[in-house]
Length: 336
Ligand code: KG4
Ligand code: ZN
Image (tube, rainbow, N blue to C red):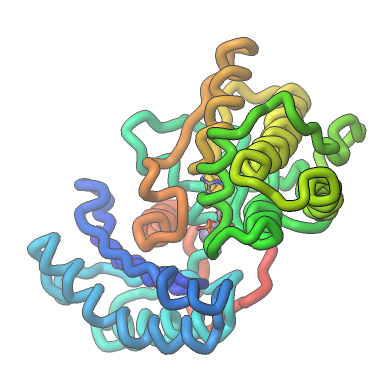
């Protein structure tokens, strides 16, 4: 069974082919990052237009990479939501038109399910059940995953997502879009002992989180440094980045440990763009060694949006849990 997966929920056009026997056999990705950088963030209309330009050539390239033709495709999976309405519609229209012309089923995939299952595409993959830390630009959730389609939210952010906090704080510090990875890079050269920022909800008795106050704390800290030093120098900026990253990572690791205990899990997977963060990985790896649990990550290239995770989630839906199809998008859509 060969599944073509199409991702177009935000600023990446991703196309991939997943075969139920051979695994992931081809993937193509185009990121619009450079196009949006000029505007300091994703411009939805430009995103939609670019997806339209890219989706057909990327699909052709993907088929060529795999040595396959359209006739070999058994089903077409696409990201139905959540995401930008116009951007989603491009993938939805293309996937439905293609599936219709091939007389093959179409599979709607929840974008977060794609992220959630992406660690199963790594060489070292977890068995069910596992705890999942989903940390992207739009979501921050801790979930119990007991099987394909069996997801329970144990805790989530009450305001900004972790990636959103990274991006907004980066913007506030004058870093270019997309700020998250850049902030994280600067934090590596920051002094961990110079500044300390609050850890919101660290000791709350639930698994929820809150990150919007952190950027305000960074703003206040920035003003204090400016007042005493005249301007934010290069080292001070790196030290602030470090303090910010320490706070976020501390909260995420702490909440994951609490969730592991509460749900009685022995495995955790980390998914979503912030899962690429080195300090978060180091923090979770250290906790895993100390408390004897296993931690799994998607391959680095599959942490951020891509077609492979959609093709894979589609293939899993086809194998285990597929419902009725239909042409629609869901810009806002809860996974559980
Ligand atoms: O999963 P993703 O590609 O898109 C969404 O579905 O949101 O995640 C993108 C988010 C952005 O907020 C980006 O700044 C963040 O992931 N991100 C990072 C890193 N790489 C990507 N945040 C912190 N450290 C990183 N290394
Ligand atoms: Zn995503």
